[in-house]
Image 1 (tube, rainbow, N blue to C red):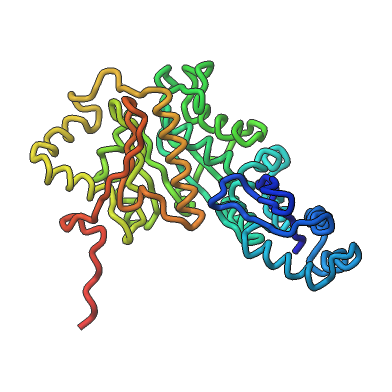
Image 2 (cartoon, rainbow, N blue to C red):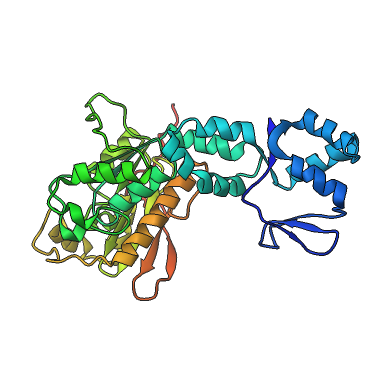
Length: 362
């Protein structure tokens, strides 16, 4: 393990002897009695030496072997150290253009996952993850691009037809590609986000294993209210975690993020709305499958769609990195009217069955 002070953390002097790592005082690491010798030792914690080499260096410059060991332990306990060797291994999973782009992402991960080598381990797991985004509209294509840029190893986008002006956004499909096949343009958008050359991708075979995660982001925003679809039931049955995301009129919706058998599903949300509004099933039937009630020009504010896509991608990353985003057992709304995100809680509905446990034998 080659130790390095986390490059994401700023350094500033609180007074003549107190060095602060990080900007936000509440979470910053503070090091007292930082004299010239100690600062000289800190400059040696640059990722080129392991702990024994650093202890020898501490002794050589006059800090002392034992004080150097104590200092390194303090730095590790306060989350200020990382493992440069693990970082190099994690980045080796990516081709050079993408590797160079991932520096800020890895720096951010090092603050969220603070132990030495923890952030590179998370990035290495991302490199092995397969995500499918279903829908290549203003939200779906942007979600796919952000996830790919953030280190997801395989991001595919499933959609049909040709790109329409309403599908385009600065974070997703470019207006210059109107008229081209959505599947082709979405693939190129994902590859472009990682700095990789534009090359064809082999078609997925019917016997391929399911993806590790699916994002349901149909272009018309119907993922926000179509939780009981056959597609969703198949994902539940296959045990594939999935997230609903879309823009409906002036609201952006992120969630629920469904962990099959462990959290409320999209159908729970449909049943909850039915409890609150007896006419909801009739309304829903008129909106499904290009029904007569569909809006002629679905509303999808560009800024709102981009914000929703970024937040949705972040929720996916948090979940796959081992966290629990607020869209689990809930969903988040963002209004185009005030830009305020809100979280609404969602319990498993007793009539859904997605959380039913099998009866014990006997």
